[in-house]
View (cartoon, rainbow, N blue to C red):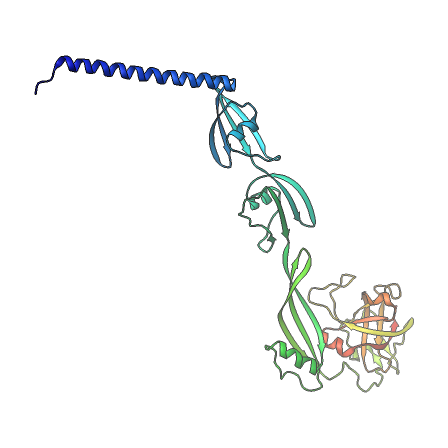
Length: 365
């Protein structure tokens, strides 16, 4: 089929005119919009600027006609609190705004509560930055890996565990009841009418210095011998040189002691009578005068019997001869005035057997 060349040329011209007319109309529309925008807002395109906002680990670009930092951030849909820090940097006509998040913090630790404003970070990093060390046992009310909220309260509880040992005397019936709550104890270790020393080891959970929880770790039972602490059962006076006398004291006298026919030192300066109790000490203990405790070093009221005083001690019936002693310690009993001396023994059982007794103290020097 043959196409009319003249007709085709006319159609091409018509198409060119239509496209040109369309383009001119669009340009006019854009120009009109620009003019209208300028009239309505009172600004030109040159007043719009690009800003780069750095916030919460992200980077945002915003176009704004504002010059105030907060207004620009509002255009970027970024809100800031009154404690946040906003910094603006301008390099080569490029403006960047940095938002540093801050938090209000109320910190309670080591007996103090203090208010702070800190950079937002994880709880662990904030505490580290503030010089607050957290041990494996300590308790913190917020996870150390959590981000600090805007208004935060952190409480650090100092937790430690302490072992405490307690001795107590129990009767047979009391021991039977104890076996009911502690099946590990030997129920046959005591006989009817017998007593025992029960040493209980506790583990105390200490929270900020106060006992929050107590757990029994161990119990040791030591039956008390029925034989009393008597080293001269007949009560018959022992006379002669001190070296021939059986005594509780293991101290070697630094002066000569000779006993008369009544078992009394031949040479003494003063006689003090009163009541005595007994005590013992754990390994590593030291007396008030720096001595390692042993039978013979006794506790006194130093206002009545000065430290270093040398003595000979026995019961009035002469059945317990404590022997040569030196004033080397003191204790709470001294304030009451009812007890004259506290005699040291090697074991708790011996102390229990001795109990409270009348004694005679012969001052030797």
